[in-house]
Length: 396
Image (cartoon, rainbow, N blue to C red):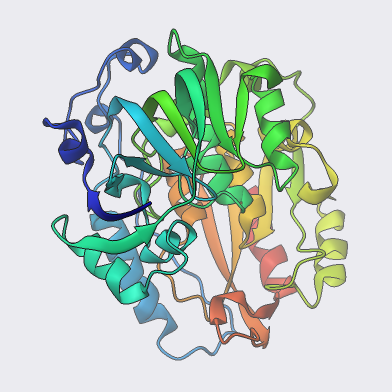
């Protein structure tokens, strides 16, 4: 069937006001009890000005000025404080990004980028997608979508947007499991297809029975669908409520404690941002009592346990650092960032601030340019002496 689909905000879809303002103090039942009735605006802002050491081996022009601008923007942005939960009837969910539609209206809040619309309308043009994203009165004309399966009962959509990356999965999907578990009378959980092993491992660890999981392998029409605002909307906009849904989740708190340890997260078997002198880095850190902990070799449960038990985390920039969301408050984090990184303050500084983790950023020299020209993904060479000196100063 061919229809003229339009993109509308959640208030337009609901036919009434939904408090989506980032400054809203309203928390809607039944989640009010789960979050203790507290507004995000009542939580402390732990962002601090970052002292940015630049080692002698870093010669990137304008590096200090660029990062001062990033820092000012980051500390000037408001935390993501919007929170809403709605229930939709006869809502269609389109994989792989979890775009939601009610009739011929696509819910704008579930679409982060026009490129995602290509998965729903493969014959559509990017120019038309951009126009439709910019105005709810502009239709995606001639859009033809595939038929959908029907799902009876009341379901909870775990998330939308990218999930094929451990960072996005943790912040945008796993962070909502606790909300699903706290909501009464929801029988099933709609999640992306488990293309990565961390999807089923996370759900199992957090206590979601397999029989409650519906994998979005094709478009699906849900009789009743619970849709919740995002916990993470961007690099800076991460809701402080995420602390309660990840680090404070009962399954995390119940993990048996091991002695505290220092860990280094390597970059192995990856296609970008490789550390060309990683053997030298690991050798130096082992002398300082570090354990090399490769996330890829451990199930999610053991990753969470390792970060919860760590006394100090050192890692190159990468998704493996997402697990600092499980560190105890006060755990120092050292992130090794490519000198050409040009995407603003990193997500892991934002996470560190949010979770109360003292954060240090060190720059690494560009050793081999990224094949696509994205400098933040270039292979890097770490200044071992500077790293050792920095850790020694932290221990003093």
